[in-house]
Length: 188
Image (cartoon, rainbow, N blue to C red; front, side, top):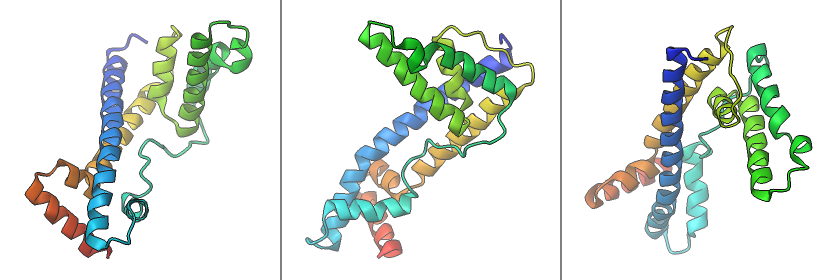
């Protein structure tokens, strides 16, 4: 898989995956402060946890890493998944005495299962790369899957950055008040 287009897509997916991870982390940090501000405005009887629950309705679940499962997975992708599982499945690594290495393989197994269920081709390719598994893409399914991952990652980043929590967290003090007021007017 030394195709230049695939290598560019892998780099792009890696970048977007890291950006999404960072956005989710930052957004989680902002969420508590935003909820505290909402709680102060609403009343002293509104707890921070209640404010967070109400706020999560606006954020549409808050987990931006899921991709809808695909029922018809290309044989090329299934083959890659099976190659990964032959190296990281718990039955294959049970005899490894090094706990750190066994835990790393267990983590890769969980990530690969999640990736195949969510059709996140980038994660499969990333795991395969870490395991030195040769990747073939005769059907172009991996390339198309990578393109879909990039689009999904961009959409998830855009979704996070359009929430009130993000806008509040990224604003200067005088704008934070406006974001809170707009949120309050819309939701209460």
